[in-house]
Length: 477
Ligand SMILES: Nc1ncnc2c1ncn2[C@@H]1O[C@H](COP(=O)(O)OP(=O)(O)O)[C@@H](O)[C@H]1O
Ligand SMILES: [Mg+2]
Image (cartoon, rainbow, N blue to C red; front, side, top):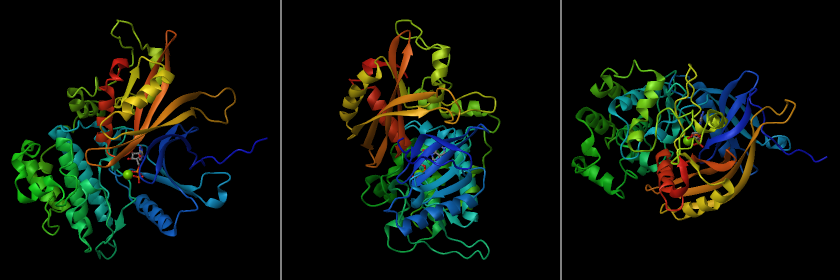
């Protein structure tokens, strides 16, 4: 008999089911506890012979810091296991971090590029972000990697800060003694200007700057500059004070503007502190949305996307839709087969699913026919896209220990990489599954980002849909 290769370990009773994301160094899976019917996420950082002591220490630090932080606006760290290299014949060696599952996806996945979200919603999420950051700093920790990809939403639409991979302890809680930091890190559009110099820097102001860039992005749907240096014309113009009469700055209201400029103050010593931020009139004003249900909030959150034509309805149609010839192409039965995939798995307590996956569509062609066309269309896009066929994968949808034929799903995959207009890399998968209806084979296409800015990924999706090669075959999005 053939020897079975390594597999993924169970983590506190949870089995790793399918990949839902990843970053520069990690792969994130959805994890299911079959007996308890519980869902979680598992962030895996693989261990190889090339893993240095320094790499190990850095992951251990991430786990130590993240597991100590408990707050409504911080993604919960549930448990962790480490599989050492010597057990590599049984399990894939690595660090396995079991985290609360963020069923609402990325916050920034719901923001219309170059439009942003409405002021009241920005206010709501911004206050949650600040509450989480205030707590993190109180615990003596500096995040240092605040950016859209690291702000997630749970199923009830609550903001959750995650990814403590670049965080550092700057204050001893007992004595209150602080230290400066020296490591240069973070992603250029979000990084504070003082990190361009060799000098050590104060920890807290660096996060305040990141929070400021995020507020700007919430309000207008883009970062203010590529990098906070003289290389960026926008940043130069900001420093000179000439940018404020131009779009998008001129769209920002007075209160929000004074808050933004307070957080984006070049000199870290003069920059607003989180306490200043919390007592600023823009933050202090009562929330207009406090009474809204998660369902209504989600609808509101995606309003601008609908206005931009990125989204047809806030709640996806589950009960069929009519194509151009008047035929019903998706009945209830067909839909239920796909609901798991189609929707952003967000489930409110009442059981209503409310956030559709934004980058997906149905096509009139079967997967085998569609795949090469997809590749050609993507390769032809101006974003400098690179694609590679990645074969097909089979995902089992049930526990391997249950007897009888197992339920599975086959997916053809295309690996996609691109550069966004910020010259930052954006990567993900285009996944194609077969969808049968009245003996005709259609395709269900899901574009799943695993690295880079969610808004850039959606621009790529939009460009693909409107491309000459793909547009004629789109059935429903
Ligand atoms: N708990 C989670 N639930 C759902 N998706 C997640 C979760 N954690 C991470 N992700 C997804 O995986 C991505 C990478 O996770 P992250 O912790 O930021 O890893 P990295 O350190 O590699 O950037 C996130 O940007 C997000 O899209
Ligand atoms: Mg990350």
